[in-house]
Image (tube, rainbow, N blue to C red):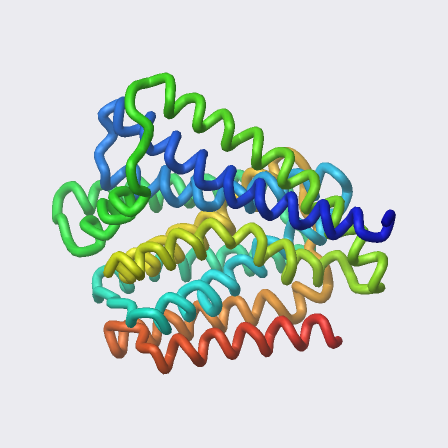
Length: 320
């Protein structure tokens, strides 16, 4: 029975992270709209931050527990999963439209964040100064994106508005969204605690590294809110929202999660991730943008190839 405890912790952690992510997105969006924040800003910041909240809480928890390999693996693995698994699965259900401005501007900023992140990882650890730099870069990106959307509305700005609409019905009044946000935060905290503890125990049981657990099990678990939201959007005929979700979430994963966590506790970069997975993440990012820019969509065939590539990636990690 004692051997089953880590698996029960992982399952409970995944359930709480998924539910917590949903509650915090709905609550935070409701509060932002009540405060009169425009849908463009809410989609650009609140929705992206809400769907990335599980990654942040898990990475912070792992770093504070002295298992920073899970924190780094979680973010890198989530970015790879977001592109290959989530976008791939959505494209299989319904091809994902990719507007050129969205790909160039939002995709370009994601690529910029990825390159900056990899460059900082070359120092062997993300120290506090690097975290502060990443947060400043993200603030600048958000500012210029907002100014662009305000002065020259395009399909990219409309996509941010669609991201808010896809959240669904948000709690009305002040009390309900506040309670939903607090419930979401509580669920994320407990879910992160159980997922990290269970993941570490399973890693030791099977003799795999904590980085591998972060890149696979933990990364998949923290990506579940994006997967659920994107699949629902696809069934509603708004598969293009999945692209906006992934571009925004991946940028936040790198700059906010690692940047924010490193301000509290510097994060060493595991050798395995430094030598291999960072470059896989970069290749996957460039591949996505190249396909989206050239064909202006992600077809079912491309989506199938993405999903297969993700399964191969996970298999080689576990089998190594």
